[in-house]
Length: 319
Figure 1 (cartoon, rainbow, N blue to C red):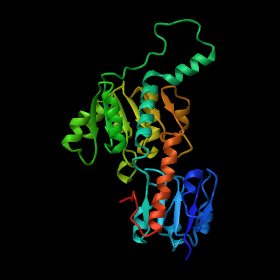
Figure 2 (figure 1 turned 180 degrees about the vertical axis):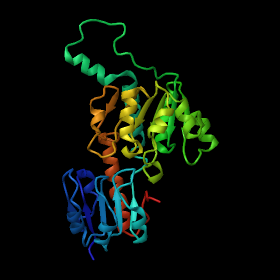
Figure 3 (figure 1 turned 60 degrees about the horizontal axis):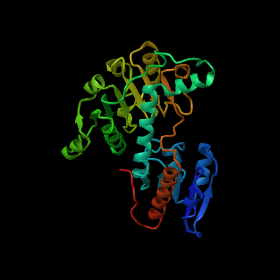
Figure 4 (figure 1 turned 30 degrees about the horizontal axis):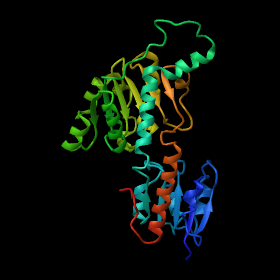
């Protein structure tokens, strides 16, 4: 059977050019997710799928694609894929870690800085024509240098963020289900702490954990109330890790000072309560959105796909 691939959404030309000419390629060149029925139809007879996080690959989709050998996600996260169902059917799942680590950490740090120093509010104020004179108490924010950063999820991206904190002489606390080795803790000057204690002590809390059942609404009313009233929450991981309704209350009622969010519970829908608040910085899921990084992600996904179809081990398998 000739090798055949479905690319369910837009992918850079340079990445698609890596696919051998004799492979069949069905390409959806838009940013819109294929409706499930169409996705199943177009997967018939395909041995591999290259997809983005907007495609849900569940038992129903897999049942309709008996020839499928690989699902290659162009993302580090894979909560859009039923990995257990894939494993049961012998379908290899891959993701794109490493190549987006530094870019995502950069953006999480940008959200932290923007929320702390009220950059978006300042930009709007400067553009509005309201700024008529220097004012002593105009748009006071919060210092970052020398403060305490709490990192929840101490994988590649969490550690990259901690590394950036060293340049700001921050005290770094972290929580993860698996404690880092002593060498990593020394290198990053990071202290392991139970989650509740970390939330109580941190001036900034940045989320970098996977979205799994145990981390859904990890940040909820109870945990938000543990945080300092001057604390700022950053989420560049996955939206449902945070209970948005509880966060809206926390920001309105002053349980915490602010937030910087790149991801949301029901993307692209954003909780309407967040939209009217000035103490939250919002971004449309663009933490990895640099030219170099998005190309590297796409290229890695294609390399994973070709490896599986050629009978070789995938480069970055999930699980």
